Length: 229
Image (cartoon, rainbow, N blue to C red; front, side, top):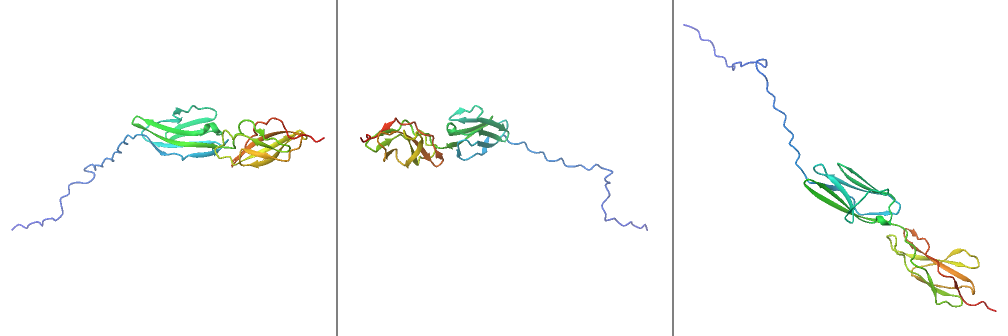
């Protein structure tokens, strides 16, 4: 009687790594970026600066390149000059104003555009300074023996902050120098203790929180009273 070989419980050997090539999975492909219209993701709040200071307005943008950035003031494109510089990059655009002046006040707009659309943002710039001098010529009226009333006009531009007071200066023919006489809040003042037959001139300065203006025009020469005999 023939003996039977025991059955093996191991699976058959199909081969080794040398017998077959191990296949690697391909790396996943990075999906292409979706095309996007431009967006302004960073922009300054309204600005207030002192006259003579420099201003930098920067808008950070994102979106599908190329993106065109244009700065405008009152809907007119800003042209570069010695006082205004524009720098554009893929990240955004910067407008620099050197030595800001009254004429630089206003609303500035950044317009960004690409082939998919456009966006814009606005910022208001205020330049503050000492006031302009009081307008016109101070006028003397109600002239009496030792007094008169001096009147004048306010400043044509208050420097971006309300005029708080006026400084009155006097010149007389005796010492021929200007000196401060008084300060007041209104645009008229009663000048007292003037000397007979002295000639007087007056000028006025406007004052706000940022400083004192240049003097106004000088009044006409004025004489009060008569010299006693």
